[in-house]
Structure formats: C-alpha cells, structure tokens
Image (cartoon, rainbow, N blue to C red; front, side, top):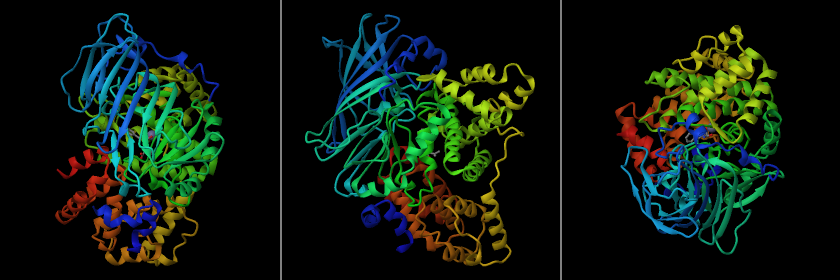
Length: 630
Ligand code: BES
Ligand code: ZN
C-alpha cells in the first residue's frame, strides 16, 4: 500500500483508491489580422471544412450554460463575419453537435442551414445560408455525448471529492465538438463569453478570468487578442485562485492549491526570462489551471491560462520545464501559429527550443543540458520506432488522417534539433535577433513552413552558400530521419550518472552508489540506462536502495514501471495499477500499455486494468488506447 501512496497523495487522490477502481498596451493587436486571401496562401487546411477566403468569422460571442446533470453545454454562438466574396453561404466545422436554429444579423431573422456529409475525424460542415451583406450569424446548438473535447468528471475523480468538474481540450481539431466554429489554426477570432454554471462552481476560460466565485454562477469572459480555434478553452469546477506575482497566478481545487503555489513559485521568473529573450508578453496575464489527473496532456497552452496536469506536482519543482514549455507557446504557437497541422513543428519545435532557453536562464546550462539529452534520447527512440518514415520529416502530410498522428517527438525534438543546428551555425546572438524579429514580424498571424523558410533565407542565410549548406533546409525539413551533422547534446551531470551506473554494473551495491543531490532528471537517466533484462534480485536491490516503486515523481514512476513490466517484477504491480487507473496523461499511458501488451499475461493485465481505468480517461486517451487493445 505505501508503495504508491506518496505519489497519489501528491494528486490528492490517495483516499479514493477503491472508488477509483471503480495587458492593456496591446490594444492594437487586432491590426495584424490576416485577410481571407492571406489565410488561404498560408494555410490551405485539409482538416477544416471552412472556406475562409469566401466568408470568415472575426469575432465570437458565446452564450452558454453548462449542465452537469445532462453533461451538456447548450446555448448560442454569435459570429461577426466578413463575407469577403459576398457569397450566399458560410461554412463552420461541427462534430457531434446538435444544431437547433440559425439566425442572421441583429434583427435575428431565421435562416436555413444544413449539415453536410460526415467525414472521419473531421465531423460535418455546417452550411449556413447568408446574404451578401450579412454581418453576423447566431447559431443555437447543444453538445452531445460525442463531444470528444469535453471531460465531465464526477466528484470522486477530483481532488476535493465534493463537486463535479469539467474541462475542454480543443487541440488539434476538437473545438468543433463543443462549439460550431471555423476550426482551422489559420483563422483567428476574438471572443467574449457568457457562461452559466452551478452556483458552487467557478468557470475559467482562455480569456480574462474572474478571481473568485460569485453568487449567480454566471461568468463573463473577454479575449481581445485574436486566437485560433484550438485555443478555445473552458473549465468549470470548485476552483480557487492564488497569486504568484503581479501578472501570474494559479487556479486549482482548494485541496491542491497550496502544493501548486509551492511547485510553480518560479513562474514569474520564467515570464521575465521569456520576455528578455523574445520580447514583450502580449497576453496581459499568465495564469495556470491545475486539473485533475485525468487531463490527457502534460500541459495545454490555452492563452492567459495554461492547463496543466497535476502529475508535475513533484514537491521539489523538478518538473517545471513543462511550465516553461507552455509559457513559451505564448510566443511560438499562440502569437505565431502553425497555419495547418502539417506545420505543427513550427509550434512545438520552437517551443521546445525556447523552453530550454528559459530553463537555462533560470537554472544554468548544466540543467538545460540534461533536458536536451533526455529529449535527444526521446528523438532517437522515436526515429527507431516510427513505422511511417515519411512522418519523420518536419513538414508533414496529414491529409486524410487525424492530425493527432502528427503529435510525435519529431515535431518537438527534431524541430528543436533543427533550431539548435541553426544556432550553432550563426551563433546565439544572431539566433536570438532572428527569433525576436520572427515573433514581432508574424505576431497574431498564422504561418507555415515555407513562409518560415523564406524568412530564414532572407534574414540569416542571405545567399551565403556555406551557411545554407550547414543549415541544410532540405535535409532537415523535407527529408526523413536526422541529418548527420546535428548537435549531439552532452551533459556533465549525466556523466556522473553514467559513472554510477557503470559501477553498479561492475558489482558495486546500489546502496553505495554516489547519488546524493540527484534530481529526477538524473534518476530518469539512470533508469533509462538500465538494461532491458534485469533479474528479480537486481530490481529488488534497486527498489530497496532508491524506492522507485514508491517514488512521488511521475516521470520516475513511469520509466521504472517499464522495467517492472518487462521483467515481471510483480512487487510494483499494485502501484502501477493505481498509477494507470488515476493518471490519464497519454504520454505515460501509451508506453506502459504497449509494454504490457507485448505478452499474453501482460495483455490480460492490461485489459483488466483498462476496464477499470477507462472511465477515468479523457477521449483523447481512450481513442488511442482503444486502438492499441483492439
Ligand atoms: N500543445 C501541446 C499539447 C497538444 C499538442 C495537444 C497537440 C493536442 C495536440 C502542449 O504544449 C505540449 O506540448 N504538451 C506536452 C508538454 C511537454 C512537451 C513539456 C505534453 O503534454 O506532454
Ligand atoms: Zn507544446
């Protein structure tokens, strides 16, 4: 029992085991909005039915109520539109939405509409009949059980156990499952929202947020910087707010807030470091929302309010690079956005690079080097495992597929490695000037791979053949695999880990190894160094000396459980089952289920665990694991 308590306590869930087994100076930000033609040039999007060159949404007024009994969001979405070509139809994306009625203009004249043919992953186009001079459309709608963006949690699935909880996850193309919307990252809108929730709960969005509950249960939101649809976000729960700095703070359940404010106390310094690197923060406030453990990702960069998994609450601030990552998206992604999901590396590769620069500012090079090495290991692993070799190119071709398939370490770590290669070629100073200018030039716009490369050529390469050859655009962006001349990261701190590991392999008892002051990164490196085959005795020795099975660190646990599964170390079974039942973070679930599914006995275990755990997972995770266990 004590084996997994530390970790679960961290999530505020230890007691539920049985139950579970069951700024104001950016007012000109709108001026850079793109025209329909520009959107088309940058981002012909195969994952959206919208025709933004003809009629495009500019602003959304959302008026919804959140019904926890029915698990339904219902209300109206009113769009201010630009009917560019004076067409007689505007197209929105929907998936599993019930569209009730549609009205035009301020006079709210009812109009006709139809839902087009359903397509896999994409849902159905909503085709609304409009007039050449139509300025706005009002869509009355309600969500259904098919709303994959939404996870409705019962009280037992929260830290406080008393109130239900709801959160959305819109990236990549799930916004259309809870709002009828032109769901393409090349289209930006401002929005306001009026959200009605049960009186005991607080609603927060990717917008200007209330700091406390009111007596009416009605909350108003405003997002005045234009954002792409995948950044639409809402969460409703028993939430409190605690400030960190003047512009930063944390929303969490009362049971979690104290731990969270300790863990993320450095978010203000991160913001300062980020602004110093790449320019002014353009979104006024930067707050975090700590979610229940079923949140399918580590973090989601919803503007002004990053959504974050509680599995980074490690009590020692060891996993906060994730916050640096989501914060970095305030530039790479939210400010300058991938125009389509084929250009996803522009969001994530830049963000990983930026994340590690922030961490280097705060904790020094030796610290950032550890992150680089771990990331490089992830990249190597992905390159070995990936079956579709074409998907190891930075520029993807996801036509006819779920954009979720582009969510691999290639975008993150190969993207980062490409930027490290550019940095090595031109030097850090020029790199930083370049990135600064990139963010200023394309602020509040969508971009794509070609447009970035054009900028790279004109700003850095400037016809210099030697530089061009070293940067090797073709090799990095349009070719599978990793170019030979990439930067191979090395870490001083990891050299000591490797020494300790060698000593252990050579017969030194685990308990006598020099592991003092190791952070979770060192431990992760150590665990990854362990050979595939370990004896029961070796596993027990390591576990006794270092307490892996009862670690309070989710990264350490997930890495350790892989060895436990592989070598049938049943001592860890209970802890692993608890972990898989409570945690819904896909990055942890996938490798663990995959490892379990390799053997018939493992498969039996996996299916039994999944049967219990599935109700706790968000649709993003169940859709992946359903495929795996099929
Ligand atoms: N934006 C991503 C999460 C995402 C990507 C959700 C694509 C849906 C589709 C987020 O910024 C992210 O990268 N999260 C990582 C964090 C990490 C790399 C530090 C995660 O969740 O693991
Ligand atoms: Zn990211």
